[in-house]
Length: 57
Image (spheres, one colour):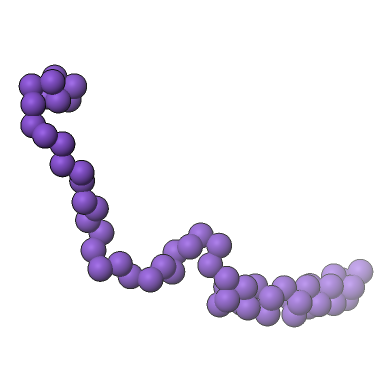
């Protein structure tokens, strides 16, 4: 039983580790590796300053 457990562990390790490493190198499921942006600032559309706009804020 102990030998069988070790054999299964070795087979699973040899099958899953290369697949996991390949997926890690190729895929980006969380889209973490994006192209660097020039800036993280976003332009805010300017609304005319008025008393009504100040009341909404």
